[in-house]
Image (tube, rainbow, N blue to C red; front, side, top):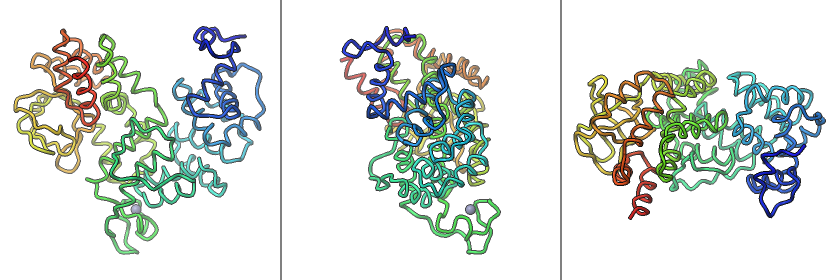
Length: 435
Ligand SMILES: [Zn+2]
């Protein structure tokens, strides 16, 4: 039976056969060749249309054996909210298959459900297969453990280009080169710049694993927690990307629900705000920590817990300098110093900002960025943030954009946007368009 939705949206220059049309689109979306696209569709249909006649397990395993096809299928399942329980029948059907691709799927499925030990066991059993997906997944585990050198070696074995230009900043929101290539970017600075040894060979490892140093982090010395804090946020983002990739966009849609201006909508979508909301109010950071607690160095697991415990708030700028800002939390009246993750241009004292400060050592970071608000929004925001409820917080933040009633006000808000990095570029772009 033809799929009516697909038939209705089918491109005019494409074939009239909806199946062929879907396969054609997969070649474009994921850069697949026609044979890969057929394999991809086989995997997608096995999950999204489980009532159709069953395909031989060996055919599904063959499809999964191609790393590009397997990753594309995972991305599509993720986009269609078909990870987790929806994958169970496929994973069960592949129970007897032993090659690298099916082992990878089993490991990802265990990891999604937080069964890290089971995932590790499956990966270790398949290590010798040399399958690139297995090696990349093992590399990710080494990265979570804080072992960038071991991770880089596994990526190299997997055929990933690990020669990364460190002058180009890595942004996990915009990177789109496949799991292994993005992981290579993530670990590159930590693998390149090595800290000194922290303990004697036979001492207990300072990471808290309980193992001897020579059996744990010798040769993979941990960077200071201060240096690893930004990496922890990237690990959280990698976790979202694998396990709940469509969640931030869904949150962004809620935030901009009443917003008409397309540029404003896309600015919110492309900022760190929806990611930060997904992680904290959305509960993904807790999911991450529950799953990865045994992999992360102890101090990083403790830090992640402190980040989860922190509350989004409204802050008043007290003092602003390059790379550093003193703020007063208007919920608690506490003074907090934010470092690194601050706007390039210093701000006037008295400005009110929303953000989510997380502790690192005795200062704070604002990985999710800042957004300025008007004085009359302060109480509304504080009340909403105190609920720590995703929907309430998303709706409240949406009001910031709603209340910018005129084009000028919206533009003003853009020009003053303080989100780190790309938000400012987008704001500049919008200002240019409006001229
Ligand atoms: Zn260790």
